[in-house]
Length: 178
Image (cartoon, rainbow, N blue to C red):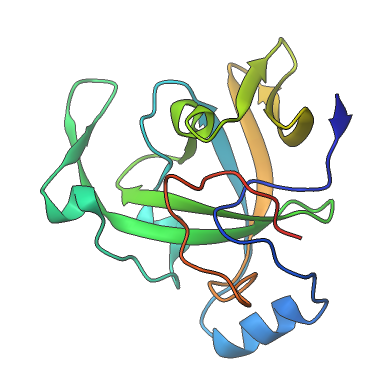
């Protein structure tokens, strides 16, 4: 399989614009981009992020938050669903990523393996990394760190990658964003 220059995304393809990040930053003065780690989780039913990692993003009501649904913690406890947000990332290798995340009081950002597979992607694991494959191309890599498969990426401003794009949905999880 060859490495594709695409990323995890949830919206329409878009033209690359070198001023995209500068424009987004000018509209979002309180947002500060940051490096984040996202773990691949085969036990997670949805992509999920803690609210403190996405300050500056609008959290919208989700089906789960509107219907008082919750997540189940590893210890069996309940974790309230606080809503959802569409997050923008740059992987440092030129790929722009956009994904829909549920927001809950969890300890780290998680990508759901089942949610990825529901979008006609394949997820493969070996002793050194996990990969997401679509149309026979690797579109995301998660190097193994200890017992976790973790991708390091930059969380961009809420308006980044938005030109001509619609809101991300759970059903449209992986799509190239140019």
